[in-house]
Length: 341
Image 1 (cartoon, rainbow, N blue to C red):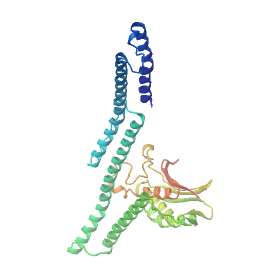
Image 2 (cartoon, helix red, strand yellow):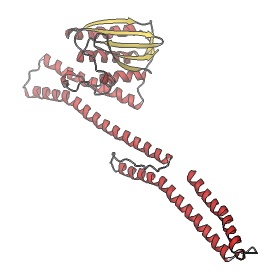
Image 3 (cartoon, one colour):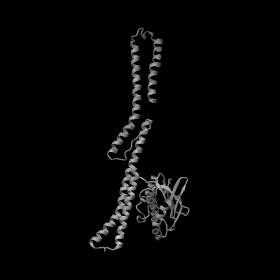
Image 4 (spheres, rainbow, N blue to C red):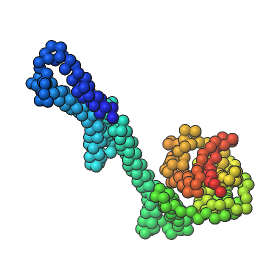
């Protein structure tokens, strides 16, 4: 609008004010050059031609400048699109300082989309590598043990079959976790919310997990303050609580573990508090990411699949809530999920 307004104003000034100045000069110095009829004189023809050429020059100059401000970023976006279509996800469009606001915004939006696409591709490659890594260990163990049984290297003892069964169960948990996260990402994770006796559900999970935790030196305590019925999907909530306790079993320092559950102002909060070693504040926002194990220096044998807490967040979000990581007064961490009831 500004460019077109400048062009129109320039042409008007040349046509109107220039004509006044032209005839003023003719009347002052050469009155005979002014035509007495409707047919312009030679001098007037020259003036009209000069006026037209000046107007065209202004229009061309404005059009060239305007087209550059529009076409330069658009051509950059088009070229970057062609590069991305050929597989170059690092291609980015460029806009100069004179680009129009709309085209400059288009370039920024395109670059943001390209960065997101590149990040998604990196995340996909990371997921593929992480899944392959998690599957490789149990599959390698199963293959070696079964091959040893086939060749007579191992004797078919109950202990050996129990070890194979644990590997198969680990694979089943990994596959179920991956299935749940895929359903969450695709928007197909469905819940069966019913008024459930959440205290009883928590007690059943605690009863099942308590022997394993006690073997590692944990003392399990429950602090449950819940109404008779809480709206939730009890199967998914049990799954989330098992993932939280499994995380304690794998990573926490032996000591007291508190299972906390209460409803405050229409929000149910279910969490597990351990005695340490705690989670650094800079990592608290990442513990619920898939395949995140916190301390990079910790050996892989100390961790699980890296999907348990991601499943907790998926279940919390499916209930319309969220997952949280907070420091505990005793120096440990409180991992919890909250949802409206």
